[in-house]
Length: 408
Ligand code: V47
Ligand code: SF4
Image (tube, rainbow, N blue to C red; front, side):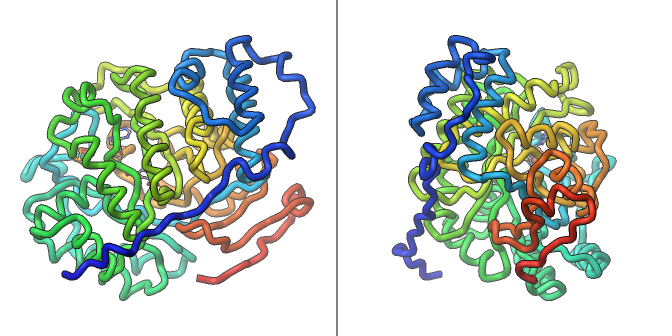
């Protein structure tokens, strides 16, 4: 396949645009620890935070202070808006050659509970929701060596045939690297072929923690960190957007979390192709790390806030409500987050690891969570184009109706 190497895309986003307009009237000394005050000064001036600042934030237990700082940045970038998407998750197979020790979802071929959806089953799943205004199908699966490359192309084409306008956000960088290997092509050639079959953007999974120390211990067979980052660079250069994640709450140190976030910030400086950052809270149940504790609400909120502060070039910070619960995700809207992800409908990765949330949330519930947090609900598509909204005074009332901005 011929690749045009000139298709370089730089997505523009200026987080410091209006920072002076957001100087708070409160005296932050009332609730900021002294060690957070220099960070407050930087945040006010729109200055980039350092790795040391990141560590100071993580080491502080002044959650309200950290949240206050993160909220300044959040409102500077997104005002009162809080986004959600009408989406459907699809985990097409759990058979995986990697066997990461934090994963309760994966199985070996023939093991009890192993499954692979046929193309007909996938088609049925998409068809069964045709009466809903789904704008995104979100697809992640294991590395199943029995599946031919054509399965992936046909999966995308099948979904597009049934729902031509849907945006398919499919295959983590780990799956993309695997598909490149399977198809004997470069990652760029593979991405372009998948795009021609219907791929719209990439989910942010597979990043885990970039530290090679941690990767060696919990996912030694997984794509190394530098290759994960390189796949994202290649995608962004081709104009294919993606998300970014960090799996936290297992054996990583706070310093390793900071290094992870700064590595993402560096790649975002290069092409600006990341849409959103999603911290993924580790669920230990049924995994080889089941002796570890679940993350606490305190850590979940701190992670959101620190990410908002360090990732100054990311437009969106998204708590995945499936992992942190809708209640924590709602509170996170005051701690740096501006996006509640979506309706989801069916999710397996977290639920097989002890996730206790429901499998999906109706649109009305996402709107209610956002509205009751004092934010303005904005239904978006995957690329953050507005689909419908409730604004200002309307959003405060309980009878407000959605204003449809665009139909997909
Ligand atoms: O890479 C696996 C994580 C990821 C566990 O882009 C676990 O919007 C917690 O890609 N506890 C896959 N996490 C999911 C993914 C994703 C999820 C939500 C939003 C987006 C997005 C992408 O799930 C894996 C891994 O990091 N994971 N096991 C576990 N026990
Ligand atoms: Fe496979 Fe992904 Fe689970 Fe790792 S996290 S075992 S790559 S499905």
